[in-house]
Image (cartoon, rainbow, N blue to C red; front, side, top):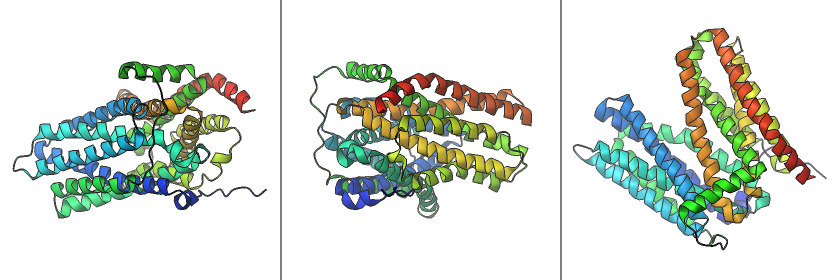
Length: 411
């Protein structure tokens, strides 16, 4: 029997109309969110001149997103998921329209910007969680990894295009037009999403939302394999926060600002390559073991990054880290979607995505704090990277017993 190609198979877009609709809506949505993401900081900086207030907007939007992921998981396990997706996207569009109207005022309200940032973060996260919970029903569990890889590429390319488009719009037409395009793009996503079939959750007893959320946490901690996946995901996300050290550590190689920008592009480049060459990931016989191996290898790549005496080799380490992170994320996604009962898909996907948000913020905070405590000498940076890699490796070691249990189940 011929082995599948190492390249990603895009046939799912051709054969599955529902997934094709989700793909189109997701790409447009990423562009719209990117327009908002660049417009809010630019507008607040222009209004106040304070980087602290700019940072506060990001924190508030992230807080709204975190709450939306938790609440969205409960809602996705209780209500019809197609209707929830459409409601969340429509509500986000209203928030973008509010930002547009506020920007058009002679004296835009900073409070309104903050409130609408929380609004869009919350309802955007609700829609994402509902869509994740509905994905197995849309594509089938056997196509989960393939669908995840295609979605990953969509996010990567959309994230590259949207800031560039947003910058051009702000320079040429102003911030209010940026918000207007974001609102229009978000409302356009409703057109393909209306083609989705009904996506009802499985029947389950009614309970208080807080009790339902606690039930999701209980399932996560009692299921050793799902818990292991969440732990690995948190450690990998914390490792990706290494980007906060680029400006400080770049002095080791005495590089220019342009070369520093290339460092920020290295991990996304590796991740895009990983997604594009993930054609055989779905056929891995023991995905749990492969997830552990790619995680350990990714941590080693981060450790080696701090040891490289040459800038080019350091870039290669970052590309390798991005590549391994993409494969690891796809394996996490496949295990989560395949091993989680339909009744818990919303809550577990919400918790899994929320830990990514928290892990990135926590990793950035810890690495940034270490960067402020220690001097920027080569030896200390090397020690820091190796200590971080060793700590994450210890987390992987503690996850190993759960993987052994999963391995026996696979056999």
